[in-house]
Image (cartoon, rainbow, N blue to C red; front, side, top):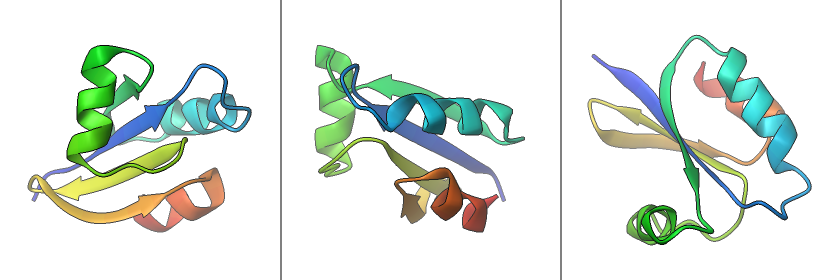
Amino acid sequence: MTKKFILVTMPACPSCPAMKVFMKECRMEGDFVDAATPEGLDVARRYSVKNAPTAIFLEDDKEIGRANSPEEAKEFL
């Protein structure tokens, strides 16, 4: 059972810096995706991300939940 996250952010997002710091400090493997880049936009579309920040939590590559704040993310750590 492998757990990891994908955090989708945008440069102009006022809530994204706090979420980035929180996710960097958690003890889970993860990827940080900037939806302002073409590659990041592809990831955001693939996961149907509607707003930033969005942390997508995966277990064995299957989505088990999402969080838009550090408080919500704690549920998956």
